[in-house]
Length: 212
Figure 1 (cartoon, rainbow, N blue to C red):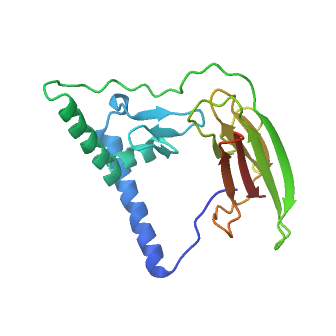
Figure 2 (figure 1 turned 90 degrees about the horizontal axis):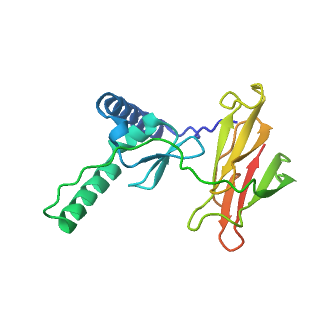
């Protein structure tokens, strides 16, 4: 199940290609000019992706993160941070600490409890899976994360192109994964969407529903 956007009309599609080309150019510029070891805002999380502490965004790989650093949002936030630091410490010269791109080390307390419910789409009859993961001891202020992983990324089982994995992670719990059919995922959200996620902050339950 790989995720693809729906094709639009000629004008929209051309605009999408322009945006993709622009991001690729930014990525290449960043890869050639930026020393990632000196970036204080990048954090590697336990899902294998990267967080920007400054903009609170998540990126699938280093290249995407570096492209983000060249964008308007990151540059604007850098300027705001520099202006704030100057106001708070007008006579002090600060140096950014050297970043270490490694997952946060937390003492794990075991796997979370979970429930899997199989359902059928009333319109198409297509099978869907609803995952309910319980995180009663999750760190304060944290929200669980999920991602889909190709069978060829993991090193636990022999690779099988017919399957992929759905991973769930939240500190201080161990990351858990579910093996599901390797079919295209409909990531449409909203009232008519086929993909649904919800974090219940009262009952500390994370729910993901997807067609398979």
